[in-house]
Amino acid sequence: MRKNLIAIIFFLSSSFLYPQNPVLIGYWHNWNDTSAPYVPLNQVDSRYNVICVSFAVPNSPSDMTMNFVPDGVTQSTFISQIQTLQNQGRKVLLSIGGANTSISLNNNTNSALFVNSMTTLLTTYGFDGIDIDVEHGDSILASGTISIPNSPNVINLISAISQIKSNYYSAFNREMMLTFAPETAYIQGGMSAFGGIWGGYLPIINAFRNELSYVHVQLYNSGSMYAIDGNIYNQGTSDFIVAMTEALIQGFATSGGFFQGLPANKVVIGLPACPSAAGGGFVNTTAVENAVKYLRGVGPQPGTYVLANANGYSNLGGMMTWSINWDKVATCNSNSFEYADNYVTLFGDLLSNSSLNIASREIQLFPNPCENRVQILNLEGVEKYQILNSLGELIQTGYSSVGDYISIERLETGIYFLQTKNKSLKLVKK
Image (cartoon, rainbow, N blue to C red):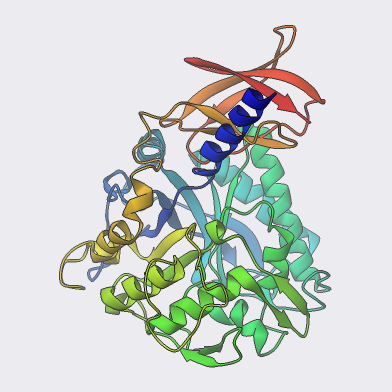
């Protein structure tokens, strides 16, 4: 019994080391800009392990049929480029919205158009999921309470995302990755007011808190915001990064109810890659380093904001930037990829054991036993799996890669065997 207990503790300890690796999320321009030139998708710097393709947009403000057409290459070439990145263990998401797009699911017709067109785009191109970067429209305006929104637009958006997730699982037999990129007014702004843009994303994120992969609030183009200590902090500072990030982790009170914080490994710091990438909120490398080290509990307090959790958050999710293209521009900072370099400097101690260097680690299942979903840890690229019952009968098959969760909610309670190309693992469904 003691040996079994030790084995279980070891398994859980080793599994929890890698439930989610730190990520460097970058937005990729599907257009050419003379200031931030086009980068072929398959030539994106290797340190970016989650790439948000920008953007899927509607036909018009009154027609929510979503469109995405690759710029500069054919559809087949673009699909091949996505697969190249996926075979490297990287995730490629289709980002919805952007600064110039409005999303309003104000009736059943537009909701259906949104769901059907997004499902088609995901299945046609083979994206790993979607990123919600909606910055305008009635579907992201707060109403009711955080737990019970009463705006049909918000309710319809939540329902639409759920349906897209379900459609994705039916098409790929795996869970869809889901990320959010709200502006600060839509999250931390809920501390000063709840209604309209103020706290607008909170009901949506609350609805998907158990299913989302990451939230990377845009800590730029923001102005000043309240923090959980009751003080106001200005963008472009270490204090702003620390205060806004901890608010998302700790949660905070609003007039629409309390927003329960998110696990630190789902919270990602979002900043512009260089001064020209945003209208305001750029933070230099030193200030970013000071903020992240303090947040992770490995550096001193950089300003006046004091962490509510004095130990910090060692499992912080990572960093995001607008954008990959701007980060590559040599004249925007002192050198190309200054943002990506800083990410490696700050998270290098975790990256040495991350999905970027996993060849020496044994494939495992996490959690195990499990209820509705399971993850295959330490995969290299995309790999086919099969689930067999105790009689050796094939029950489920599909493909999985680094960070994916496999849904097993349709399996009955019992013992199964999950097989990859070179491993067979016992799987216990509770």
